Length: 232
Image (cartoon, rainbow, N blue to C red):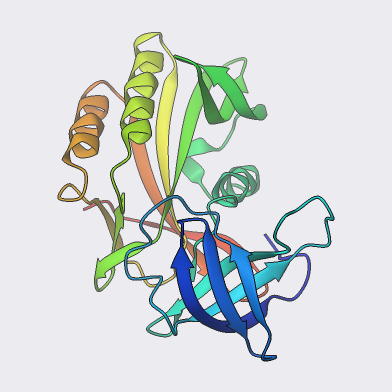
């Protein structure tokens, strides 16, 4: 995924009310950007951190700027949770995610389960259906180890149970943990942050739900799903 126009660099002043961030751009201008990330962003939102924003000309938007990237120890980290579904879709279509290759059709945001929508639904006359849930990952507390979640996610646990229900009905189901940072060598669940989610994952895995983790290459010009990382 290439950003449609050059990103604007600056320094984070503060993140507040979860979805707002004040940034001082390199131009000297101070702006308020939308932060499309509902998590805690642990380790990614300290004042003074180097950040990159995109700008929209859509007159219907309340805020023209969106927070896209933050630099941590020399690595760029993607914090915009609006991108992972599209990134995984592109990776599936290009064959990067080999576990999901070979399906004839792909649809996004399809209703299923208990008033939920699946991120990606793959369909094939010979292979049947594969329900794919995508989670954005950017937490890294120990060198090389990416973790999810960075805050309690009751919704995430619910999705795991619903995926397991699809397996029980004869379909395939998979969690794709998309690591929006290049400095991860492995992936694990942050069970200390959300033990309920970790238990739901174990329960779903026992019922046949698959899981993979992939890391991205990130520059101020593009984000690309690049490689699979092992799950610890």
